[in-house]
Structures are given as structure tokens and as C-alpha cells.
Image 1: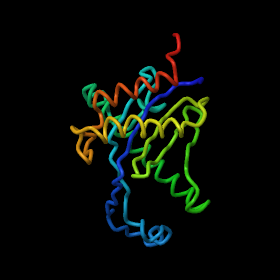
Image 2: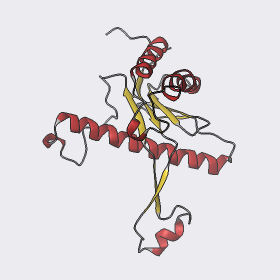
Image 3: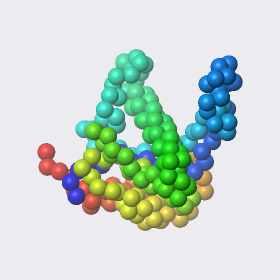
Image 4: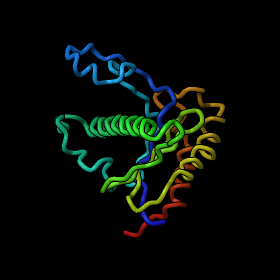
Length: 195
């Protein structure tokens, strides 16, 4: 299979609504649906894996309004990964909602493509969200994401006696067995390309 995997994310099933400050512009509040007018949806990214270290997480990660030069390198990386996870979840949430509004409750959001990457999405029956960013030449990865959930996540995270039932901050997800299995599985689908 041509192409490569850039990054992989798992979001938990506990999306939370956080209230916003009351807006003073009634016209703006009137245009939004009443049930989401004063709320922000958040979910915790419980696992992030970057596969291709030569490829940035997002194309213009260096061009931000924050001054990253004053931060230590580990803080810069954490800031970028945290921001990327938030942007990805927001995009997924918005696209899923739009697909359901336009096509009905039975329609599903599977993937979208830009000029630089393709985002693949799989939601488990327990509402965990598996997301993979790949090269644009890669076909559908829905079955691959399902296999990661069914064979790796369930076997090495859910069935692990050492992992908690819930994963705040990703506790129990990033264990050696899961990470090794994920790297091996991805390497078997996308063999390393010669430089």
C-alpha cells in the first residue's frame, strides 16, 4: 500500500459540555441552536502516536501566535500535540454533526482529505474515537482502525489487569504491549520506505 501514516489518536467516550459566558449579542445567540448556544464540547485525547518524525504534525505548526522560543523543547512539543488533538477533535465533532444533519442519523462520517493529509475516523460501539492521519494517496483505513481497536486495544488495554477501567490522562493506554503491537501492525501495512 503506497503512502505513510503521520499520526494516530484515541479520544475517550466522555465528551463534556462546558458552559460559556453568556453572550451579550442576542442576534448571535439566536442564530445558534438552543441546546449548544452556550456550550463547548471537549473530549480527552487518551493516546497520541506520531509515526513519521520527518513530517510535522500539522503543516504550519511553527507559525503560531505564541512565542515558542522561550519555552523548553519538551513544552513546545507538548503544546503542539495538545493543540493538534484539540483541533482534530473539534473538526471531527463538527463534521460528524454536519453529516448527521445533512444525511440523517444513519449516515456516518468516515474520512476527509486535504491537499496535505487524509483523516480517517472510526468510532467504536463504546464511543471511543480512533483517528489516523495519513498520506493523501492512502485508501480507506476504516477496517485498519477497527482491527487496531479489536485486536490491539481490546487485548492489551481493556483486558489488561493493570489498566484502569477509565483512562484519565491516558493512564493504562500507552503500555508496552499496545505500543509495540501498534508499531508492528502499522509497519506491516506501511513498510518503511527507503530514503
